[in-house]
Image (cartoon, rainbow, N blue to C red; front, side, top):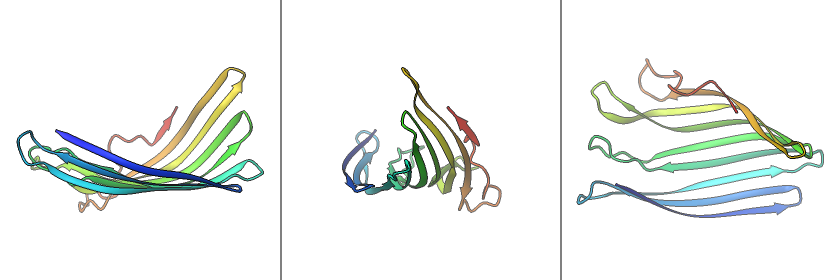
Length: 178
């Protein structure tokens, strides 16, 4: 069984044309079999974002976030929690009833895999980076739109294996649209 509890604090500050968002989250997790000793872990993650609302309705922004994901035991093995980081920089355009967004992002997280010996292990990292375009708003009265497209380059890094280093992450599409 696994149990996770999180506490967070976040604040959004408006100062002239600037909006600043900052937050902290503290997680505690415990996992293990009933009647056995439980593996306990905890972490504090950060979140920060800054947006400038220009008079020209073009709003540049940058954001940073961290993640903490406890792992359940597999095949009798316990694993360290997965910790990830994400950076994003972009522009939002406010055209009144419609809006557009364009962003570059980069996310890294530990990579988990099953070895040739059938042992589940954390080895290396996955790096996902890409470009995202979004459109949102009310095209005509009563018709709201939300859509976008993401070009994604997902690679395996620091794997320690020449056969996987720099290769694409399996199961991650190059292009997504909605």
